[in-house]
Image 1 (tube, helix red, strand yellow):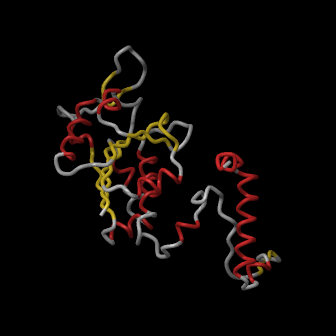
Image 2 (cartoon, rainbow, N blue to C red):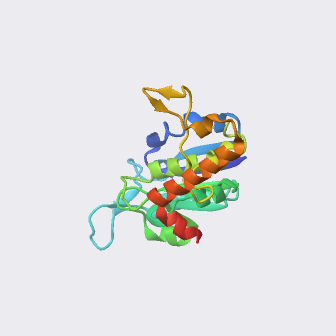
Image 3 (cartoon, rainbow, N blue to C red):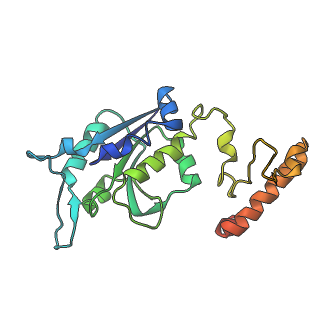
Length: 228
């Protein structure tokens, strides 16, 4: 069973995305264990301080090295970890390939950044991988951590009702997925393409492949360049 430990100063932000839908079902089935740790439990003093002013006088607070170090050390004393991930805007951009790779790991720690950032010594000595969900800045790393978890967990065998569903997702073959339709076959004069009603698997597959290629060329042309 995979285990994901998430370190955060705002654990409440993770309750909803990790407590519903596919992730919840995977947890209930015992396919993955996700444990959220409040870093304030590792802070010192009456206020459980986990942040402080930055050296150099820059604006904004910085997450302190000691609470993070103590939490990670406690976890590593219980089990080995394949990755210690930091959600960072300057990390490698999360894509389907990374999600596929991480879904094959055993145990993962995800550290959620917050405030102005984290003491750089954490990144130098404790983090094994930095991942970003896009070239923009969020208030914290909790939403990216939830995205990483969702992308990973849905790939674990047994997490989805249809084992082959994830294989036809966008990006799995480097292309966007083709359009999908369901009943009724006509609504408001809007019709499902005839080929999908034909019952001919070869024609349907050819249409889907053509649609995937056209949509990728139009909406994500860089994916085709990367395949060359």
